[in-house]
Image (cartoon, rainbow, N blue to C red; front, side, top):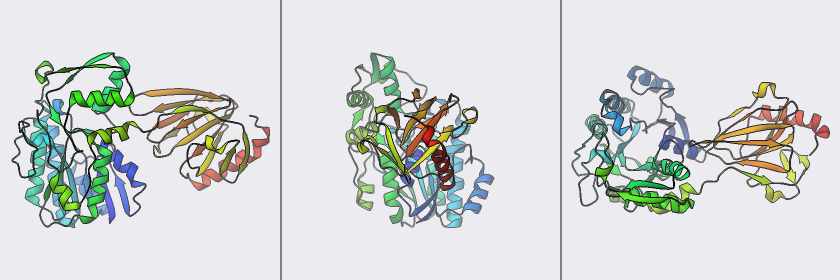
Length: 419
């Protein structure tokens, strides 16, 4: 398929696409976010496209602060409307595919049956209006092989969203109130990302097409919250309230159900229920301390334990930390897609983890325990003692030169290291 440029690369959908990119080698992925490329800077975007020459633009960037948009309309329209119009022109000029992500907020939210792509938008908020203007601009320019995908109630392991808010509140409170008279469908961003990559090779339309995508089923925010707590076994009393009891600056749709028939029939995709997708999202592994037996030997790039089952993933590579100057070497780990198992061979140090919701600190020393760090979690290492020496087993390969250097260093001093 060639080169895919994903805007909004650090957002919920962008991060899910990053995670999937490692299993889609048929594409060359290029991710940008606001810090790297502001899509409202049209000259910079034009230069970027000329330099990188993507085959596909996947625009996941958006101004999504619904309430703040009411008093910051200029920024909302710059991102959600004018930037989309410029991307559409570039796509048409360079014959690039363009996939633009939109929202259920383009509708009034008072329907009684699921909204279809042919229903007339009537947005009630600045956010919704700015997204609809972006859609209209794209439809007017009408680059071939372009699609608009409207979605609703997006959540993910990344970023800020309803699921992560509920998990936080579940740790802080024993009782909460959640709106029960707004109906919609939660959408797992990972499912949407997979659907985009599935349909991408088959997008062959002359005029811009609109599709709806969400998970299957109907929920209220109250139902959604109850399901989150039930799956995570968090004891929180959830009380249903009406929208009028929780006033917000921007009006929320009371009904946001999207009809997905068109995208399913056009591309033959299957869509999971929101309940099943939520369960998959919440089943992602947590960091944990696990007991291990002493290290017996080092052979090549495999670390052997008395019970190989104690390594809870497929070992691909190891690396070592030794003689850390000011705790800085390899202190920050930004792969996120690598599962790691960290063992302290001598001395002590702290491992600070961040899953996007909170920080967790684990103090490790030369005991018969190791720390399992799942992917999707940032980690840094700090507060090394004078003789700190760590072994890190990784589920993906690191830079070969660094690995060889660390391995040679390990071999030189391993006889003096005790467990």
